[in-house]
Length: 476
Image (cartoon, rainbow, N blue to C red; front, side, top):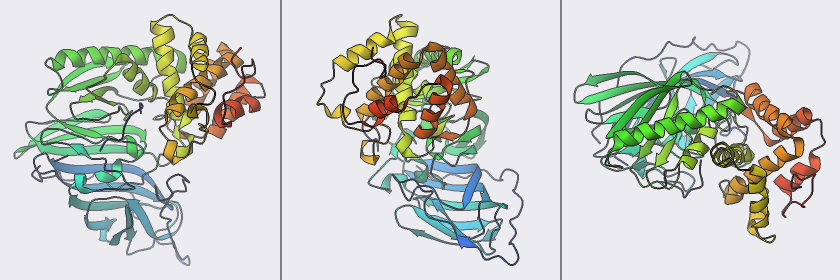
């Protein structure tokens, strides 16, 4: 995500497509074992109620119909789940009113409690290691829902885009809402026939159903729930190919007088950036590429996996460079916990600056580091945030981005070009489609470089003051 203010939409409930992807094996109770209740959080200290214990979601099959005129969403989501412990009850994260829940076809008792918890009690206890299917039916008005003080639904009567961080999924489908639980996705989004739907991954089909059109998008690589998105509205769509995968870029017709031309230009820029990053980081990690420019008043861009979303105001090559960088740092390799946000934003900001400064501009990144360091007052609050663990109130503070990217360039200067790029390539290759923590990265940096970097990382990520101007800190 680029620096932004929090964003906070609308329509006739339309028929949803029938059928689910192949059913998971039926869950079996384990004789002689008494199940336990899955916890109402995955264990993230920043957001204790995010995610859930006892379950691992393998796949989401989302069927949503959205009426832009009324703002009503009606849906059915099937989740293929593996129990990680014996369970008598488990939770999902969801905000909209729930109509029914089934576990492997049997009606299950459920209750919505607290901020966003959906408690589910199946009729049969679930054995650790078993796979089962949960089907949740729901209907409501996402724009009316709040969670943790956030009102994240963004829409008007002509356009909608589901995008935000760190929370978005729970406004439109039930989820195990934490980056630590990634899954594949199928999206079946039904909207009035005049609208176009864009989502993650590749377009599988587009079918007419009465006065509606149902778009089926599929994302096969594991994805964190907050990165799942859809946009619907009057979009001009440019389809091309880049790095051997489909490159789909959509621009709202309300955002520009020549949306098709603009979509073509931004698609080309997206491909140029992805190609430059592939040269230093290794292969692009996903089976699709592209982006969406919305006309809605959103003050930030977001790295939705395979297809970032952008605001029409402030749309620049630098914005594309930042969000495409996230496809490696944040999407393919996601944070283990939200305290690890430096691994997302510091590295995306570094790569954005690297692309604009060195690849395009032909200038020195070390010169940029020195200028930025010299231009920031020593008593500035910029230096007081511990970017290696900034706290939930500073998750998207400017220091996480700028000081974070300075730390990456300083590390590059400290350990040298060969070790630095080897480190980044090793990180994204070894943890592809997984997660990582700041501690994991610093340990790998020490291993790859063969240097003791304890003082370096303390100075850049933890100390509430500017790093000393020394060679050990990458500043000389």
